[in-house]
Length: 300
Ligand SMILES: NC(=O)c1ccc[n+]([C@@H]2O[C@H](COP(=O)([O-])OP(=O)(O)OC[C@H]3O[C@@H](n4cnc5c(N)ncnc54)[C@H](OP(=O)(O)O)[C@@H]3O)[C@@H](O)[C@H]2O)c1
Image 1: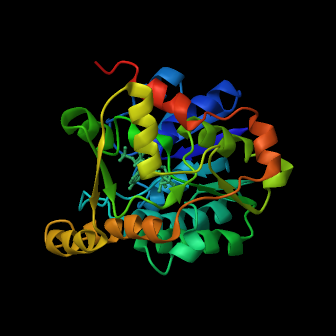
Image 2 (image 1 turned 45 degrees about the vertical axis):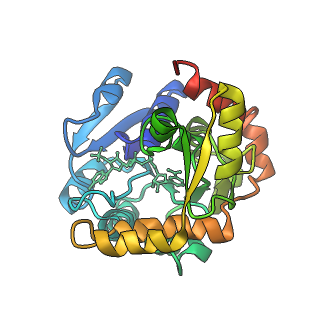
């Protein structure tokens, strides 16, 4: 199948590109800059230069009516790509242009609890609005809603591993008692690619998480047990998150919105039941302990 991938330079998007190529799909990726394209180049993915906020670039990328997978999200730590624009307006525009182009399938990587969380977390509100636009568009779709990635505890997008290694501290944003169905990025990538043509995924909301449900506190205990490190749990109280967002607003306007995510996790948890058809189709999924061994084996 011909697939246009948006977000291919990101963590999940890169894993999806690998999976698409491994499954024999013909992949084109919309990329903004020369940054982080090495992996896509190595895979032999065709690159289409453009910003997803640019309708002309999107029309060009959609010209042969490929199936679409998007994982794109804004960055609350950068003023250049606000979540409001990327998860919000640009994703909605992408859906509209995909409808006009007549794409056969649209897989939107959203986030778990985008519906109930929309009232509490701005990024979930943007994602939920985009989900609704896609559902109303008439384009055959799958809304993939992952729980938190296991890679939260690896090097990369979150600082938690560095804080463990430097200070022996397991930092929790809020109490750290909310449970998450931590899931491997690789398993989410496999689900996104399966969703392109699995009949059970057609026009469905598909939560994906697990196989383990753990709180941040549980996760640190597992990391300590597996690595033999002593980890002291240090919670950042919820009011401090709120204050941090307010104080950071002049420099990073969406920081408070981002912290709202952590308050939401802490209060409501972030667990799900992955549908049976997907569990079967995926076969084995990486569990949390295996992930920890992979992330921390090179730790001195
Ligand atoms: N992290 C989690 O635990 C978690 C849980 C549930 C759901 N999710 C969702 O999963 C998805 C993938 O997460 P991730 O960690 O892979 O994200 P990521 O690494 O931050 O990747 C975001 C991607 O979006 C692209 N992008 C941003 N602005 C763009 C623009 N204007 N035009 C074109 N591309 C643009 C980025 O491209 P550049 O390289 O050019 O910046 C990058 O490829 C996100 O939607 C996220 O909300 C994550």
